[in-house]
Length: 163
Image 1 (cartoon, helix red, strand yellow):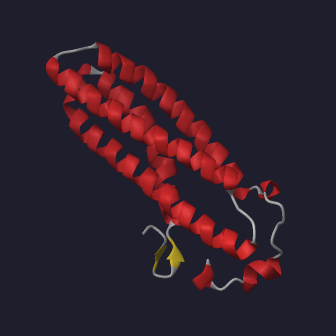
Image 2 (tube, helix red, strand yellow):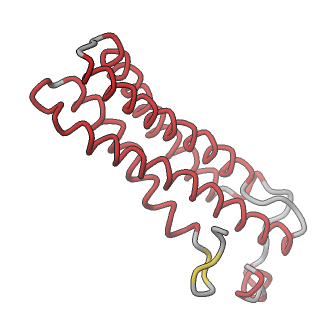
């Protein structure tokens, strides 16, 4: 489903949205929850966190489709560490959305415990997002994890319809 768009892999387009949105929302969410005068904007933040979570899941699915295509052509599993890092980041994105939604519910009921927990956990999520984004990017560009690196001639010989 999340494979190609116009004959080009969708993953490189989605990954850029995901790696920007997750750390940004990991910082914005706890700030909006923590500052009482900003809390009226919390529904918008929850919606943005939902969009981030959807982008993360779509990025993972498109990455798995691309990995399958490339692995089939290469004869071995490519970008294994990159995929693992992406799945972790997708989980962080989903957790951030759930925490933001719980905060919205708690703030509307006048509670304070959940918003405080969200601030702390979102801060951890932001750190995890920044660290995981770096780890995923390094793993995606590192060919040492693969048994055999494709030569330039082999890469050029792969038809776009197979990638």
